[in-house]
Image 1 (cartoon, rainbow over the protein chains, first blue to last red):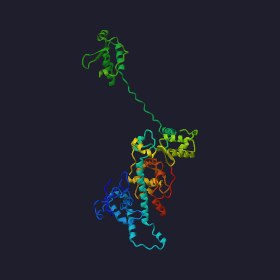
Image 2 (cartoon, one colour):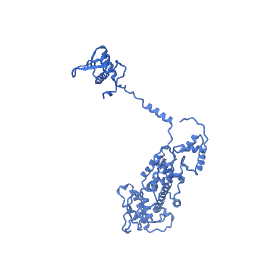
Image 3 (tube, rainbow over the protein chains, first blue to last red):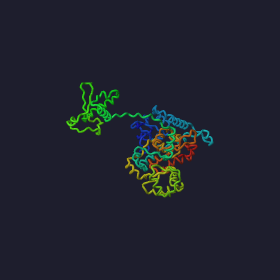
Image 4 (cartoon, one colour):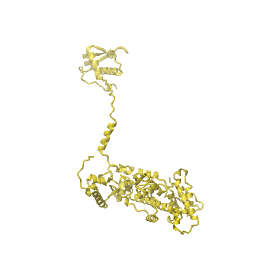
Length: 312
Length: 196
């Protein structure tokens, strides 16, 4: 937002502009306008001000640029310079233009009154009929504005010198200093009050009836292996297809098959299938077969591998 | 918190210092009186003692109306700032002059600020509110009940002031002139009482 500004205000001396430009408030207050270097005063009438922060700021900057005294300068004489500056306002600043125009009209009024011959003041009460002197009123506003503007600058200079006071904020001091974040200054909430609020909330929103939980059926290899073992106790052979007759659950079928494979691996049973898609016939291994394979007596106690890691 | 009355604890200067030391926020005089089970006069007296004692130390008593807190002295600001990585406050000129108006004329309404600045100050005030340099003190009794603005602890801390009274006086020449002319164009007709 730091635009260049040039303006002729009749003295032809280059002066840097800082007064109205938004930015770090470092350094002394300067006028808001910069004079066109090398231009002749009468030709350099264009002014570009980066950020008009107000009509009083602009008017004051014109006075200060001319190194005139606010207390004594005839304000009407600044009307032209002020209007020249005003003419450069962009359309998108229309929100503030009315304030500038208001001061412009005041300046024109002051100038016009100054041009008129003055009546000799015979009766002091006669002046009262003319209302408040616009020049005195505008001057008072300028002085008041300048006092606060300068006070702000002094505050900024002091803040720069002192940097600040820091309160003790355990754990958050670092973050607070950097982010400007800090805990609220309100009183700590009474836990009893919080408890009451929670109780009220419970009344307002009673607990909903949860739907009955659907428990997933767990089918284990051990469970299906037990069925195979039981079947083999009653019969010399068991046909897998017969064992699973009527079972539609594919998981049950698959786990039963895995259980059968697990029993085969443990040399508990021998499984034979004469032809593809034919009956899968299982029988218990004989003692000789187990001895030949190097395994001992049958034991149902040893847990089966449920992780299927051996199939991976 | 229990409603039962607790036994009073003698509010010595050291006890008060200890209390403010552990507090993570400014405490009101009423709060301190309530915690110690003592009266406001005792709190005021001990705070006065503490303020004087601390003048030779690296800690200061920062006062904003009814509330007080302990903060580092301005002399230690640079060192502490270097330790925690803080920097001096930086504001635009518009924010600075608005803040000065609030600081010197609080409680003040937006329209009073705008009369002095001669320009709409809504955005600037909102920015200052957001940064907590300016706080809402309540509402004016004037038509429309506009908000009254003042400065908060954040302002005092960031501008290195232990109280608003530390602000240098406004331009005396201007003040005298305005007084002579009886011209006080920004005086509000009525102000509401400051609220907590």
